[in-house]
Each structure stands twice: as structure tokens, then as C-alpha cells.
Image 1: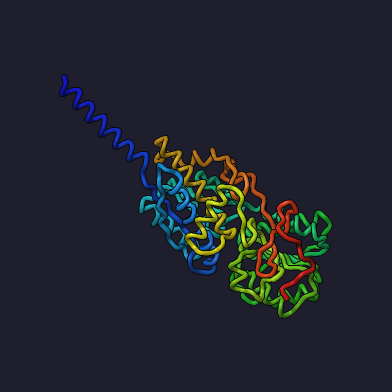
Image 2: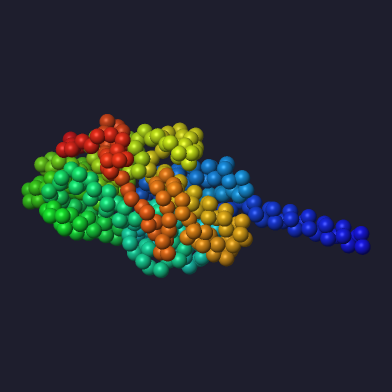
Length: 388
């Protein structure tokens, strides 16, 4: 009888040890990111935020750890698919990253087929959340960018706007939404679409100068597009009052790389530069970011951090319940409801963050100043104001 009890006790010890190890596992998370190609600059910013999230999570969770495996998707859809497949073969339990809706769409489709949660802040095309992807989540969306751009244009009293936009899915969708909303408010709107391969924007700017004669040029594209558009405008100097863009524009990296092009340009940003955080979460993010990268964080890193931290927390909750391999990560993501560095995040049934609202910032004297909405402004809006 004594031997029996001893065997039972030993079995219990082994079982408890196994359970302890199982509940405190290191989980692999894939980062599918454009580190080369035309989206490399924004991809690098998101990647920094992802790595900071892993650093903070591993120091504060106390029970589980995350290891990031990164694969460069080279800013190309086919490579994005291959990246997800490679990460899945390496045993990741979920994927964070992606930039550009045209890349995210096939990559998240692949993740969905493989049963992996895919979370991003790099794609705002509405089709991403209307195509039945059960494992797809994003923390930002077109509506948030539209509200920010419209809010700024309304505050400055723009009576005429020329919208210059890339024919990619997300940019076309946002441009059309902004056009419709402005027209409904009585603003004169003209639009100019361009193929993503175009590098010479002088013909478009010349039309704006000679035909449109608009007060504001609204740009809906990506960083290389902005550079080309602003460069053409500096040469032709249309009689406008401002140049306004959206994502990937109001960042310290753009100011550092293109100091002659960025002054007075507007773009979306949740963070001013230099940054100041008042919450514990914000300070943890900022401190870890500065420690890892020896520089101030920007909004790209902030987005990467938020999307990844929410994912890591969901993984930890699923691990505690033993549901990692039973769809538990997606289930826990749907239960998310908390304040973050970008505001309150809750995911609707389609994976969209239903609370997202962006802010507008302006490049001023090598700083990025939040200028809209007024309650979050960190400086005074300069208007009319141009990069030349």
C-alpha cells in the first residue's frame, strides 16, 4: 500500500511538473514584415514596436514568454504568402505584422487557412474585414483616417481640395470616402489617381496648378508617393495653402530622411515627436523603446507595440486555459476590451477595432506636432503653410 501511495505521489509530481512547464511555455510568434522593398521604412518602424512589445511582455508577464521569428515579405504579395507559410512551418502560434492591404490580404488569407491569428495595423482596406476571415484582427481602419483628414480640412476651412491617390485598394477606398464626404459638405473636390509604379508626379501637380487651383492637396498613398508628390510641388509651386497626407508621413524618420520636403506637411499620427507618456503602459513602452533603439518612439512603433501586446496577452490567456491549439487565441482576441496607447480597443465580430479614431500632426521645426483634434493638440496649427 505504501508503494502504491509512493507511485501515486511520484506520478502526481511528474504530472504537476509537466503542467507547470506546459503553462509556462515560450511561444513562437511570427512577424511578417516588409524590411526591404518600397515599404521597408514603415515596416522597420512596425518591427521595432513588435520587438518592444515582446521585451515588455517577457519582463512583466511572469508566467509566459514570447519569441519573435521575423520573415521579410519584401513588400510583395507573393512573398507575404511565402512568409506566412514559412512561419507556420516553424511552429508559430500567431502572426503580427503586415503592411499594405494588397500584401496583407493574401497573407492573412493564408494565415486563416492555416488556423493562425493574424493581427495588423498596416492595412485599412474594408475588404480585409468583410471577406469572412475568422482569424483576422486589426487595430485601425479607414474610418479613423477619414475622420482625421476631414476634421483637419474642416478646421482650416478648406473650400477646394485636390485629392491625389494611389490606385491600390486601401488608398482608393479612403480617397473615395474623403471625396464623397467633402462634396457633401459643399467643398469643391477634384481627384487624380496614379499607378503605384509612377515616380514623376509633375503632370498631376501641373493640372492642379493650372486647372484645379485648389487650396489644399490631399495625398493618399505611401511614403515614396508622398516624396514624389511633394518634390513635384516644390518645383512647380502651385498656389495652394497646405499639403495633407495620411499614414507613413508624419514621422521623425521622414523628417530625418527628407528634411527639405517635410516642413509644414500634415499627416496622421497618434504621437508627437519628441514623445511624452503619462500612463504606466506608455512609460514601459517608451523606456523599452529607447533602451532597445536609442531613439524616441514614433507612431509606427506605437501601432506595432499595441497590436502585438494585445496578441501576446491573448496567447497567455489561451495558454492558461489550454486552448492554444483549439482556436483559443482568436477567441481571446475577441474578448479584448482595454485601454491602450491608441485608446480603447475592442474587436467586432469581423476583427475590426470599433473604437479607432486617428489624429493629425504637422511637421514643424524638425518636430511632429499634434494639431487635430484640439483637445489632443500639442502645438498650434500652421496654416497656410508649405514645404517651400
